[in-house]
Length: 364
Image (tube, rainbow, N blue to C red):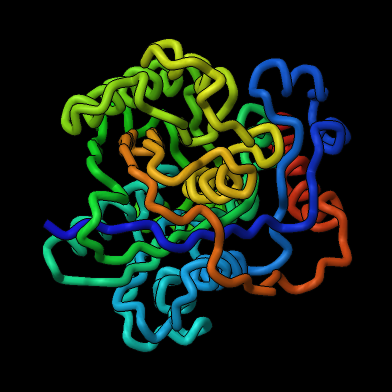
């Protein structure tokens, strides 16, 4: 049976940093309040289009694999904050990187978008339908943030990551995955006023809102991810002791700690970068994978366990056996367009608009 080895990896994190102290300038919060509850210290804010991040991450991943983009036969892009619905953003990335032989598909399963894409791409390679696939996961979530809602405004940030997977006879890459969805809790994470279910004739249509039931999400996320992790370990016959590193979705530190405890794995084996970027949704796992490699946390032949959850409520876990190579074959100088503003300056018009709208709604 064919397998799908991860041969390239890359990330893109915008340069503008929004700290907890920055958030405290316009909402009732503090660095201590946010950090103690989430482990988040800062997050990045995108100053251009989402596709710019995806293109940069893709170019770094292709360079790491030393692959000509014309060799790609499929691009899978996991995101819920695409540049546009028509055309899909995967096609925008395809055109920019020159991958003219690739089919291009957007995947919207919220925070699980990258792992779902890796699962789909791997299985397409296993069937022989494709040979070289680019899987991207990322988010421009700040564009859809209601900056007057403290419970969500402190959690999210912008970033993107990507991997290249290639057909191989070696038993490496994604060995097993378990994905699912608890749709009875689909409204526990919801961005409102986006989509055809909302009337464009209402004044409220101009303002994005969030439903975020934190306790419900926490309870279901930890349970579903833990069960999925144990499922893929059982399927592959790999023990917890054999797992070298856990690279989970970076939602918040409390969820990461609870997941490790429930699965029964040491927190020392859990890779964490949520303190630097916050929850970047579909971007968390590919960015974390890239940084784990940069920090020499992944060695040839390592077993890497990953788990994720997102709106829907979608969930999943995957067990990856790393190949022989943990360093890029070549490097790319790709980067985002220059940014001459601070994160607060970028967000100032949105912040003003939502704070004033919240105040008006309270007065009414």
